[in-house]
Length: 343
Image (cartoon, rainbow, N blue to C red; front, top):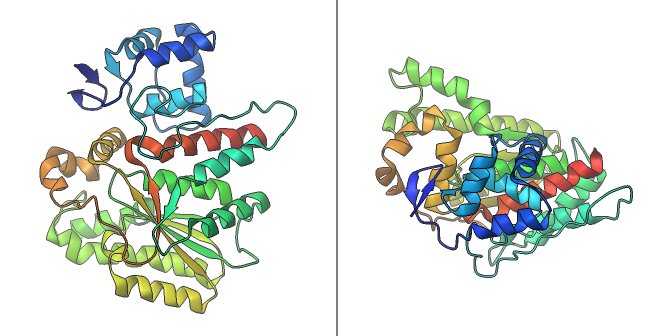
């Protein structure tokens, strides 16, 4: 039984801690050197949590005494240019491409950064009626041209939805980093309004689960988000929106109104759903330590009873598989490759 940094004690299917030692030795690093590089890479990649990475902690990871938390796992993936399954953090998912090798980019820019981006975008899959290649190509085209505003061909509105802790914000940031399109994130955009409104109505500023929030505050919150989006849409500016969109993406009427309004203005709508598993969501939510998540963590079973992990948008949509960090580690590596290219 191994201790975990996120939730105390538990077993992790497919965990092979000896692979970390094998990778470190293959790279010719001591524990001290590996720790220094982990910290430097985490800072460079702007990870939310910079691991202390002291030799004792790394030794505990390699011996299987402590299972690395998400920030450590992502830093390890960057350091060794490998995926979670390659580093022994978990078993590969069915059909998952576990190989993600990046050619070192020195003076010769050989295009491997393009491969890195393309491989990360391959984590986008479609439903039976949704073709992911169209959005992938538009994102790659925008990255190559680095538009910071309107797309001269046809603007796009990308809706990135999913349950709390699914990794939707991370993926949305990845898209904006590639394309230069503005990001409208519901939480920072509307939180001051939501908190003050809840207090004015006699509620708790961090409430996200009562009828007061759902019936009187949430509609205003999403209206603010969409009004900001329509300001960009009316100007023909491609935009990435991120929010749970649980009620919206599962409402055929809501989605059709959005799609019809955008199409009338010559703007495409690409709904993206980030799927995740309960264990990973709890780990991500715990690490971000947001006050609005306190109720979820304190009553996790009660909260999960309200979550349908099989839920999907009612219109053709794209899916990002982020179970156990699958897409995020690849996205992080692609971002790392971009930084190597752009300095």
